[in-house]
Image 1 (cartoon, rainbow, N blue to C red):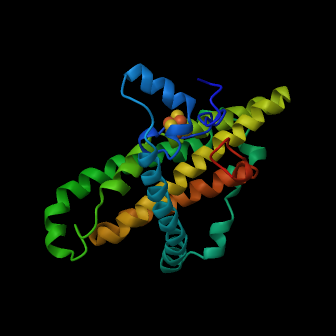
Image 2 (cartoon, helix red, strand yellow):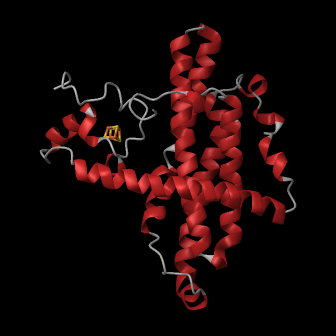
Length: 245
Ligand code: SF4
């Protein structure tokens, strides 16, 4: 099966393992093997095309999110240009000496998990009142952005820990391979953060009564994104097999 020409070698190494939302199920060996194990049939090209459209829309939402974060920064009295610079506490020279789980980015990713867990019950409690007060509420499907938030909520932390571990081991062993893997893993974490940001910006529009909490989450995630970019400046340029053209 691995020799089939349509399959993309290694596409599953730096993907997010969200096969239900993947646009490459028909070209992924990992998916084929798991589908056979589940006896649930083969990949579905139509399903892949739908997912291409889904991620295209999320990509457009991300562009709006960047503008939204800038506007929020201005409203909050933060110089938007300061958002381009990560605090010294996340500079590699200081933080790479620590265990990966103690790294500020790992802490920030864990904090984000808690922020999401805190947010949903509060919104559930207030949803009845908000439905009455918000003309925009329920006017669009929130199911998809919620799916994105929930899927990546627990995904970002382990990816960041693994990326930092790879960078740490590269520092001591000078094996280029571990650093390459660290960059690929950091890129997957960045994509998960990007998509989560886009999803939160859609939530921001739909929950006017909870915008303050969403602003905190957006700013927190945006800081985390910039910190990861500082530590792994090569990550965005990393080419993942089949996923980055
Ligand atoms: S590349 Fe897509 S189909 Fe394959 S394992 Fe990753 S998410 Fe699943």
